Length: 219
Image (cartoon, rainbow, N blue to C red; front, side, top):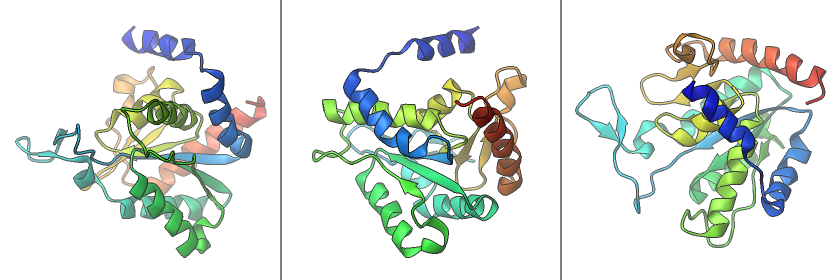
């Protein structure tokens, strides 16, 4: 019941015209394409502390220690290899990380030429204490929820909630092994115990199925 009511809550949200326009700015480029959402959560020392459980129950990690930007790139390369027509939307709470992916798009054109989409970073940065920063976060949340697959940092609820809202599969990246989550509330434990040891095979199966369902009905 909790999951059902939470979905009803998300579905009841109505965006302001300004936020909706920002969502449309990206969505108009991506609608009808096969695209994957990428959420890169980095540690913000102003209000983060080690909270992500590691293999050792007595140790906790910062988001920066959970996974690296390079691990994202490696997974995304595997997706491009399987699906050459795929595109990526890059969301993050960190300006440096967004710039990292912009540089990678230039340096690794074999894989990522014209495949990355970003929302413009405001002049005052990605700051949760400003109205602009919070509006940007909402925009990125909505865009992630529209993707075929969400790749996110293990331990961060932002990408997980976006994928849960629309029952979008998610791949949680972490050192020591990534975790694939089906986000199907009809499955036991939402099937979140399935480890993604074969990343490309899992993505191929689920993205292909979801693409057929989504685009045949025009949504």
